[in-house]
Amino acid sequence: MCVWCEKYADGYQRWYFNPANYARKLYKVRKEEAEATGAEGSPMAAGGMALLTDEFLQAWDRKDYATVDKMKQDIEKLSWAAHFGQVVTLEDTLKVIDLLYPIAIMTCVCRRSMLGLPDEENFTCIGMGPGMYKWERWPNTYRGGVQFLTPEETKDIVTRLNKRGLVQTLFTFGTPYIGGICNCDYPDCAAIRTTLDFGVRTLWKGHHVAQVDRDLCNGCASCVHRCQFKALSFSPSQQKAYIDQFQCFGCGLCVTECPQDAITLVERASLPALADVW
Amino acid sequence: MLPKITVDDNKCNDPLSCRKCLLACPMHALGLGTKVGPKKFQEIPPEQFRVAGVRLERCTVCRDCVRVCPSGAIQVVYDGGAGK
Ligand code: SF4
Ligand code: SF4
Ligand code: SF4
Ligand code: SF4
Image (cartoon, each protein chain N blue to C red):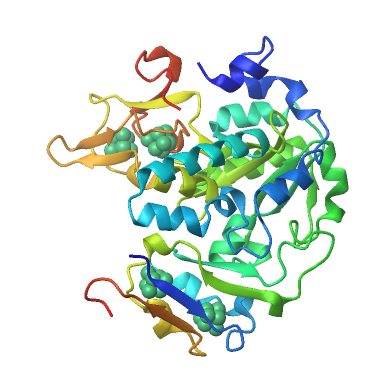
């Protein structure tokens, strides 16, 4: 079972459907978090990447796995308490949008730091909850300003970003307070990258797993480019899509692109060996 | 062995509008930071932004970034293997 559901669902189907998790004070942990993540001056200050110090990279490079493991545990502990994400399907994201107010869209700090994406092309991050009323206090974080949205506008935007190929994720700001819907891709999202490249889990897998119906799949390969998690490939021998279900994050991006409806999302919990693979 | 990537901030003055190296790097190993930290509560002027190697373990030392930089600001040094 998802430990976040165990701790914070409080009777709701998933922890992120519990409205209480959107109602806490947003900036309570901000200060400690900034100090803990050593954000000063580091180009890696975006997302969890600031936590990967030079020391970590050096240890990684010399294959000193004992040190890497120790640092990894410390980073995860910090991230899970302050700021981590979980992949959510578009369907669940749309439901979440109905739970909270206000909602505002702003620029993505990850893609700004990795690609220098200009503000006008970079409005993909959605902040939500009472903390949004204070956005002016954080002009660098929210460079380009924020735009307040109605729930319907938010749903349209998220659906379009999903179509564009971006993965929906929910992020905590002082766990369990969920303060953002991010729309992410590899390799420019710091959380996806930290998680995939180093196994430092700042992004958790979602509650679903994708499954290919081999009878329905006609081998058109239109799904293959959708996966941001290196889980989906194409089997030349079978001429069908192949999903590594241990690697699948359950985002559902491949599902929406299949013209045959050959891919379905099943509940992670329905596959006993995957129920605890997050 | 990790490569060393150095960017001369005096030569690279407005990376936010140039960003050629960021877009050229096949491994997305470079990143953009600021000289003054995240500076909450105030805007950061463009000249305070800087380029740095942020994912050195992914750099292949292809030096595409060096070639594409109009101001010769980037140096990539590698002491291991044959790619000096
Ligand atoms: S898009 Fe659908 S039909 Fe085409 S390869 Fe992928 S799963 Fe098969
Ligand atoms: S296989 Fe499909 S559902 Fe799984 S992570 Fe990749 S795109 Fe998302
Ligand atoms: S040398 Fe090549 S891989 Fe390394 S940072 Fe420059 S462009 Fe990227
Ligand atoms: S290409 Fe050169 S001048 Fe342009 S941003 Fe990169 S380092 Fe700066």
